[in-house]
Length: 375
Image (cartoon, rainbow, N blue to C red; front, side, top):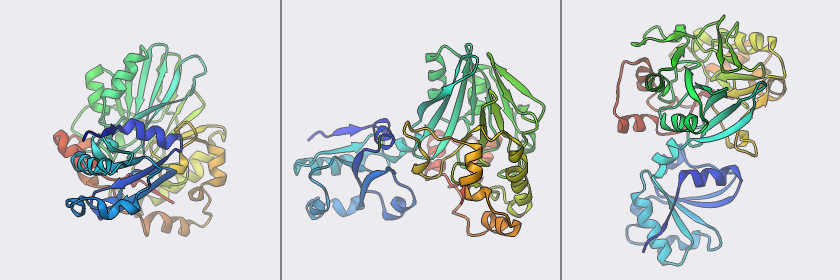
């Protein structure tokens, strides 16, 4: 019996719209507990596929008859077989096309706002990983910030908007996902920018992203002046776009702050992290709209699926910005941290140009949730 496939894009729309969905995840329990599809009104049942080889009768009473059921596995094959068995029992069931591999790679572009002198800024939500990338479009030119390795969606989107990609930025050397910045710069002839203090070991040429630079995209200014903001990495650099948007990279999120331990420098960088958040950012306008490079929990998504908040609001509501005692702050960002991202050392080496893994290896390295934040 043929059952219908549900794409990662369709599931993303259900997340954004807070729709109901019942997910039967047939991966191993450890994989499910580590990382799963999350939605405000999603319900779950985790039964490993090998327990269903003889049939699905024993789990029927655990499944709803009045809700849409989505069967999920790692790569698709197992979920198709389970979905077919459930469909034969009369249930309304689909399988996730491409499995969790496809969920990990899906990017959903969301328009953030119009720019002052024409143009737009878009946020690309990597829903399965919590990564956020950006495209600034102005007067036929485009800049990409913190691109993922799935470069085609950025290239196709810019083409659709009639914009030429002229600049590509990485706000820091990423440790949780493989950057598509260099690849995209090569393909388009764009200038590739990287903070020099994060580039001490890289094997490629780049333009140093440091204070004093103002990059113009069409009619829009991207200001890097005096916004060097170390802490998550030694070179982490913030950008102000159009005088309204603060692209904070991985140093400041909506409900959390960046962790300083992914290069093995937690104790060394705590002071930098605190100074960036508690001094440098305090000097900025409270009206700046913070656009981070990650989100931590689904509650951070707005009604349209975008992630943003005014800096002044974060100084009131974000716990990581309200710890008066320096020792307490140090404990927060150095002790009892969540597990480090999967294969983060290999990812850092790949982003330095020291490794060139094939596509399947890259996918394997990135599997799992993002873990760049502490709260």
